[in-house]
Image 1 (cartoon, rainbow, N blue to C red):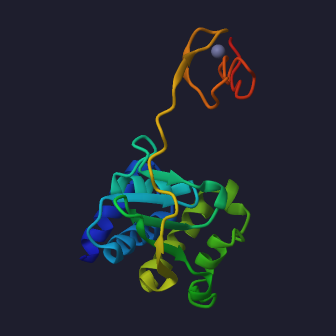
Image 2 (cartoon, rainbow, N blue to C red):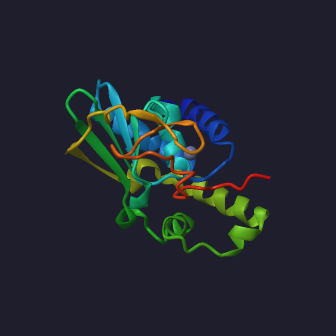
Image 3 (cartoon, rainbow, N blue to C red):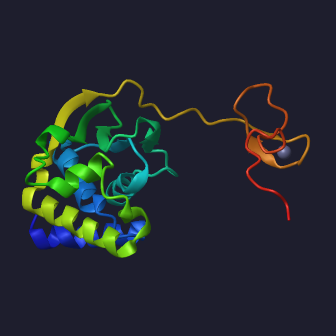
Length: 198
Ligand SMILES: [Zn+2]
């Protein structure tokens, strides 16, 4: 892929994500690398973190939360992804390899992935922007050299069965049941009562 094509792709993902997050150029290259190594496949994806990586996957592969071809395992919390073939579960996992991020050559990137940047980036938008620019520049200079990848076999890649629906005895709204004997929804049962009526 030409540099100009890559940068155009990155712009599209920035727009989709609605933020110019410095992880996005990195995420785009991770997706492209996994796709190249996987070859022709009916794509499924796994994101091991939520953040911008999951948006790059959704935008570039069409594997989304909504169509369930993106499995979001964000509790793992790693800047890593897998693309796999939905037919046979054959996959490629790509991850950011800290061992390959030379702290001399890519100091800001190393801090970014270890969450050790100057805390000012949390509160000061200008400092955040400058740090983000350094990370992107460091990445453009070093490219895919900071990734590792390996072939994997997915253990469980079947689509989850379609859940049955019931009508909540309390609020009368239809909901998808988790367990056979559920009679009231997770809002009425206060498990996920995330709002207050006003
Ligand atoms: Zn209810």
